[in-house]
Length: 202
Image (cartoon, rainbow, N blue to C red; front, top):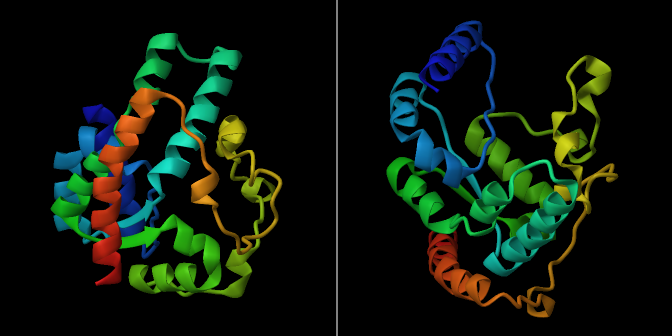
């Protein structure tokens, strides 16, 4: 892990010193658990900015439930790993990361309802120029950059064949969660989701 961190840091330094923009995407709850010290150093060293995409817990739990069920059928991971993933608490670690580093909060439901405005605002926060063409999906495989996320296509079944970002609405009220443990997790997660909402709207 330390060797990988040093390698990433060297690549970041090389890229930034050559004037390139670097975008690093990962799950905030995972980064917060495993990489806090590294991020502290990077924030000081590179003045990095953080953007958090926060989804309503009901939608997040339902989506995770479907994806984990598919993974069990594919048998690519052990049952122990999938049990850990299914029980993972995402919202509190993400809130802890925001408390440490600050940043910009994007509510997934806002992104759905007005993708152009939300993405434009996010680009502005990051200091990047926004263009309307960014709302169209273009595979990077034709440019020699593999679409590695295809490995996880059943996690993104609703957007895998999409060609653009379109307006939409998640009907939160229609989502049914039957697992009692998930229901308890949703109640706990809603506390942090509402904290993110309050800051975003302030």
